[in-house]
Length: 246
Ligand code: ADP
Ligand code: MG
Image 1: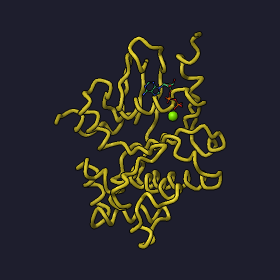
Image 2 (image 1 turned 60 degrees about the vertical axis):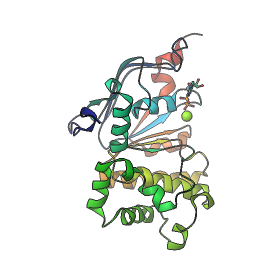
Image 3 (image 1 turned 90 degrees about the vertical axis):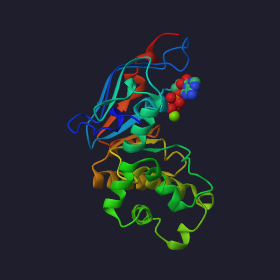
Image 4 (image 1 turned 60 degrees about the horizontal axis):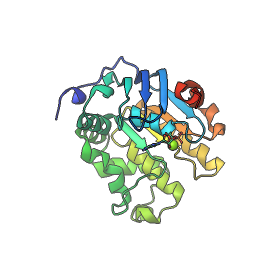
């Protein structure tokens, strides 16, 4: 495995920088995203707001290096992801990005702790960071779960599939935070929760990101969460593709 993607990222660079990015899902299809510039500083908490279909998840996919743009540049931690191969981007993502999916994507045949430990199976860097913090990976998983109010030993023996939606969401958050990745990306993780629990969940994420200095990019169509964040990106306004006629 190479090389540049595994190299130590540039500590002074903004955590995310997009320049002149255009993206489409099909080669001959319409542009889905056209963003002149997006820069996110370290430790920032960015809220991305926009109606369904406005390209929020598509943008997160570009930031995480799941996809690459048709034109323009995507940099994360100073690394130009848009110029890297698929395996290099996968490696970079495993090391530096914790992703909370809308449907959580927990592994149903693994226990709660094994789900949380999972990122450390794919990243030596995150494994090392977790072990610098706790005596074992399981101990670190339990510590994070404890911060997310999932500490009870009896609960931790349950199958992930038997947990409530709110509990599954917190397991997904603990997994994303495991091994202290620099960037946490959350794609509408609160859409199935009531308003009080949404706020509580966002606060937990803030606390954990603050503890490790992580940057949080959080997508939601729930505008009531917006005032909690440092800054909002209104995707329907920033995205020039969305304003093109036809
Ligand atoms: P949002 O997350 O804001 O709801 P998406 O980024 O999921 O929006 O979708 C933006 C547009 O891209 C929509 O028109 C959607 O149909 C299209 N799209 C999303 N994912 C794919 C995909 N994997 N393949 C083809 N088109 C897609
Ligand atoms: Mg989406």
